[in-house]
Length: 134
Image (cartoon, rainbow, N blue to C red; front, top):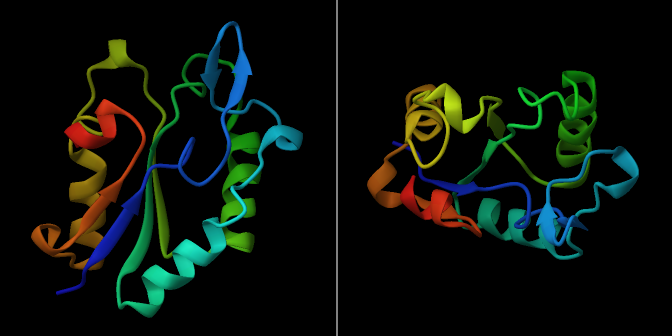
């Protein structure tokens, strides 16, 4: 079985944007800025024999704040700049009560099944209670 490090995206690999007195996910490509050490971290994860997989809630899709084309641009930046094996997004909002939106474990389970990952020997890196809950 494989081992993985699961990364949240916003606030972990890329910078959040300050607006409306709080920090949020970027909504345009010019504000999608990776942390300077993100590439080093994903390289170190690979060198230790772990898969690097992004597990991220992206409710701005269902809220109509960004479209899938922009999400795809963000994704391409991640794939071009970091050592990432796969990316799993939940594009639902809290009110959808889906099983993939963190803190629900759906995305982790889907990644585990696809990549034959032993979740007990894997890690989740996040910046919110939802990441911890997953």
